[in-house]
Image 1 (cartoon, rainbow, N blue to C red):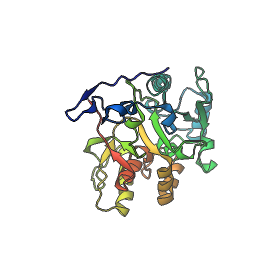
Image 2 (tube, rainbow, N blue to C red):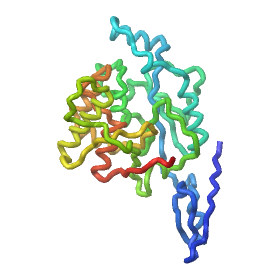
Image 3 (tube, rainbow, N blue to C red):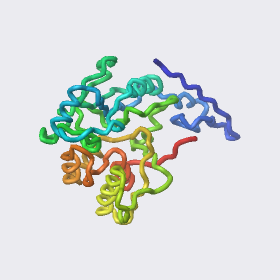
Image 4 (cartoon, one colour):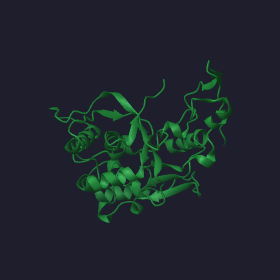
Length: 289
């Protein structure tokens, strides 16, 4: 499906075209350059999409769980599948037709409704984890530590949970700036306090605290307080590789935890974005209301 974008523009006093939409690659230009506001597929650098997906109803997944945790029940809220992936994929096809490939990372059988192709690639955990002893895993933080190891993944990719849905047309400029830096959408308030005295800390906050401490070791004046909003994460593969090289122990411990643990870091939803920002490799932006 193709998406048409209509751009309205005004003529300024100095004779320049001023585009009204903030979705245009260029907002102000000479009249004879107005066509440059359109995004041609020929000039779009390959941008992939990556999903992680689990289905607790899958019998093989259940066997893996019982072999690993025979005495414990799994959390249905974390592992239940309601076919959100189907509708998320439809939104990708409808609103980001410029996407290159879509990789779905899972340790479950493919859903019956899904047909893989040159565009949709199914990726098993065994293909991305560096050590078989780390598997099976039921820890999303561990899986996210390995996404940059997907064979054939492009330098720029957008990571989505399967419950993310796009509701309007998007452009590459919503995810990357003009020089290829990823765009991070942080919450406006800070929730991550490494010196907190609270005893009952949610696992995702604990992982953020651990990530904060790593960044503070090298950049003591920078305070990584804000969580990333619950929206698609723009990522650069080379920066994730740089993070793994810089913090190998944190990556190893997180990958080795088969369930979320107090030693995890949350790479794709926190560590990457603050590290990339403080090193000048990403930019912040706000979501339009």
